[in-house]
Image (cartoon, rainbow, N blue to C red):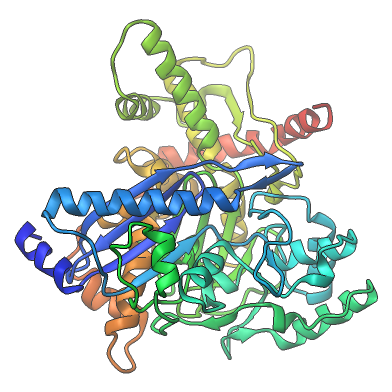
Length: 532
């Protein structure tokens, strides 16, 4: 979009602002009338491990959001020579799941417990059995039931339970609501009616009463909205939270807050059956849209929804590219010690491309990227490991290929359940996230790992922040009866170029061998956890 056109769109408020709180970065994207990004802002942050819990403080949430918005406003001023004073639509997205428990005064009862925590094993197992529905460790209801089981003193004072996106949206709009995709990571959804499953709600209340806690869970959970609904407006107080300078005016209509999984589906146009997407960052997960229910409970598959409420199988792996990033940082440090001046992006690209020269099966090398526990492989804690056999081919290409495949290995285990056990057919998988920034490397290995064509698009590079901006625009200008799938296909992605990589036979065979070794070597990882 030409700067003069973008400038007028900003002045007229014909824009949509999407903000996403990811694991390591808070990002804001401002889009124009044609959905293209016209300004961006970001802020780096990290979770903390406090009292054996992964958390982010409320101070870090709000200081991060303000820094991110300030960076966006500065980018608007630099690119378009105007002040950002209003937006036409606003949406908030964040990491799914976790536990944000508030009392009747809106005060936090316990530090925010993120999706990364795996202390909820007892609750997850019991609820999965009682509901005949997989309840992962990360889900909000597992965190709540574990707190009940553990007799935590804050539980009787619980008035409202929400996710990070729901919390931020409430503070900005005053509305205690949640998009159905994010809500489906709190508690199981009745797909036919687009609401929390009533039979499971009743059973949870009984289980809580048996543990000595009287509550109606439905009164504690946020109200559900679907894509295209409006979910309040930016209040005066909310505008000041984002922009203490006072320049941002209140009143922007807001869409339902969503989880990063749902915005990733939007950002890759993968909301139709036989499509899916993989998001790879601190965690890595796949979302596959289903035509029907799965045949039985699988602990590797979470049943969630698209932002429109359609059934999705989610394969969520707690550990993604963080350990790979640590190794790349080590090589960058070595390069600096030699006096080289290559920036981090050049180091990443060089090392990633080297992986394509490695043996298809990684030459006998093995790695585990488990910085935290990994429920899919039954581990409550993680220990990053690199190991090899004495006769392995230990070179840079195999080393990098090993760590890239290790980042995808747990995902492959879950996808095997979906593709082989449930016979789910995939026409194409869309990929986004930092792992896929180096063109054609992780994309090619993912295609081999799941034996499916993998697509990467330019727009998806802006990720979930762009996806929630699109959902905000949809809530404002959807036509009567228009579905999210039609809106994305006909308006947002019409004419978009995609880079598609088909699986290579040699790569597929090599990954199969690597995975056989990976599964066998899980005993080593378990021993490392057991012996610290």
